Amino acid sequence: MAGAGAGAAAGAAAAAAVAQAIKASGAIVRIYPQDFLAILSRNTGGLVVQSHGGILSSKFQYLTSYKGLVFYTESQTMLPLPNGIELITADKIWIPG
Image (cartoon, rainbow, N blue to C red; front, side, top):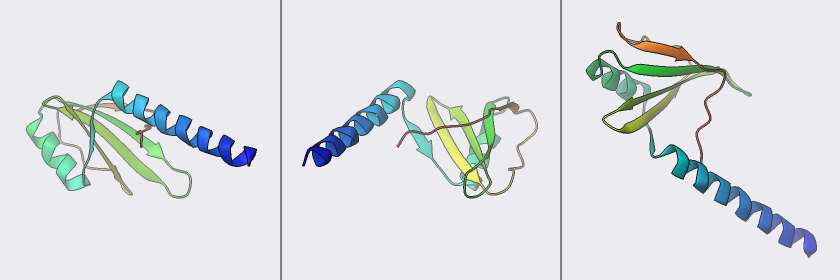
């Protein structure tokens, strides 16, 4: 039974860590790639963070902010970003939850 209690405590600690990460990063809105591109078209001169990787399958991940919110999407292929977008390539993007 001690193992079950330790497992529950570890699960609670993990949930608390995710909750803290969400508080630290603010709200992150997950959207479809076409909606992400639509936001970028309204955000001339905006900043996008892109990462490419994956464990089981290769994927591209993208983050941008717009009107105080952070938007996230992922795609199996590289998105055609509009001209004028500043692009930062990151080794990894981690989204809590």
